[in-house]
Length: 182
Image 1: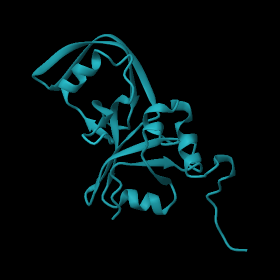
Image 2: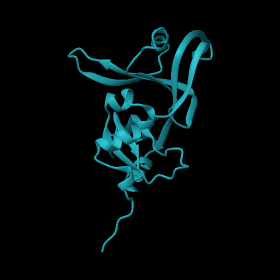
Image 3: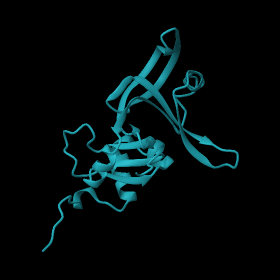
Image 4: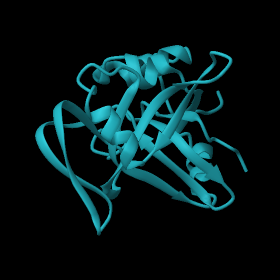
């Protein structure tokens, strides 16, 4: 079993163009014996402007003012649930990517998200049952890469996939998923 937590999954260039995951870059939030969960980081969804009702349960709702609040489609599962992916600095000045769905964090970020860097808000996620992602990796549907803030947060959404592949020294137009012997 691979522990892919904190890694990037990059869709193979051979992924069918009409597939939900074509040219996707996915940050893996959790990976263990029970399966894996990740969020797509290069699929812009909508920009929110104005008052938005948010809640962390059915009894605790509040309105937040959003200005140029960019959101992403993180995957086809639980599309009504939101996640905040952000870069957090540690005590020793190291950086790490953290994931939260905490309402207080969203409250703080809503005041500065139009200028916030290293932070994205994602609706939905991707999920794999135990062994499913490993099977997809064996079938060369995905490449694995170290997560970097440059890919997750800084690169233009339309070029994240290409840039992630370039970091692995893979050129999409020269890639072939076919192998064999001569």
